[in-house]
Length: 494
Image (cartoon, rainbow, N blue to C red; front, side, top):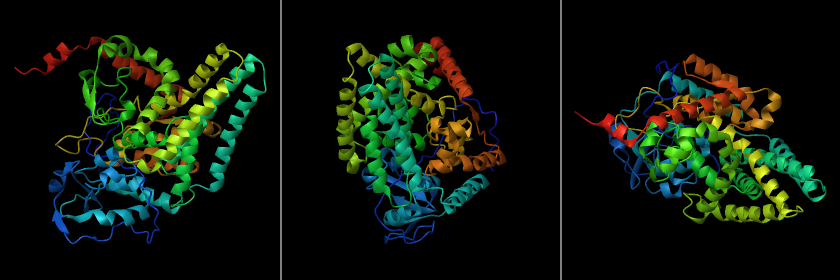
């Protein structure tokens, strides 16, 4: 049984040893529903200890454990469709639950046997918590919750395209400034709503059956075309977020220096493993942004979309982290966005209206940035994995994701506004569940968390906003008192 972790403070530093993976879409037929891999397709079927596997944790020498079997993923890392960094986080670890969370059975059965080199002789038995969460996932699978009905996304696409039609009407057919600004508001809502579809595509949860990954990728490209944010870039970063949620030096979703810092460790000039560089706590961070970040939060969210454009362009023009097969389609879609969006704005009669239209539409779309950060910013921040291995808290995939997630309690009629992000705990534990099934499955995960004394968190939207401002303010006050000299004196020996 896991330790009792109710009352865990938000600034506790917790060492982790795990990560999760991303969907590896392979065009092959499933031939069984077994969870255990075939024995092996290699001749060298050796036996290894967990300690021996842990030594193979480098990019040029990477092993991992799945269902008691040892996989050599060294040559596969650069070809992983979910991104190199995501699967590399598994090196030397047991990633059974992480791999199952992000892949269909048929993917695991077709791809992983080619990587098996042996078995583990001393793998510890899974805890009762892990067994219960696995059984719940199998229950969801039997009910078909990892797929959605075709009509569900037909309705979603029809709804968002009707919003876009309203934008075109208000901009092109109406002459008043009020109508044009209303068009900007509707455009921002259109971007927010279509981004939810892109989120589902990135998690391969917008599928009607196990093998329609091609249709999902095409739908993702459509989202890129209308939103201007690369779904391939988002998937690469978001997969790592799921692999190491709220981990201080790995999770790209909390690595926002110089504008935001959520933990004291970020004041130290921490090396970020995702970005591959030191995230400096520089002059701007120390004097302009972080000490006042609770005031900056909403204004920055209103402009954050511009940064996402830049990140998308940089991602598609440089190394694309395992997404080479889809980068050209995504690049063409992104270029399409930068053609239609300026053309639409320039139909307005004056430059004042053009600028106001662009700024207002992007500010409204910033609601999405708030929704995303609400789910994790105010939750505990974890330390990076260390040599000691599994720490007191967060030692398994499910515990780690429960304590790093915050749900938004809302009535059913507001589900459209939150787009599934309100069920963040369920989503993090079972990311392939289709959005149409989230509300009816949420009580089950809440009950399971209660059984194992996991701190399942769910609050109204307003309270979530209050929590995030308090978290930012607390770190801001710490930043005002922090200096490199103070830090060094605290670490000095003698």
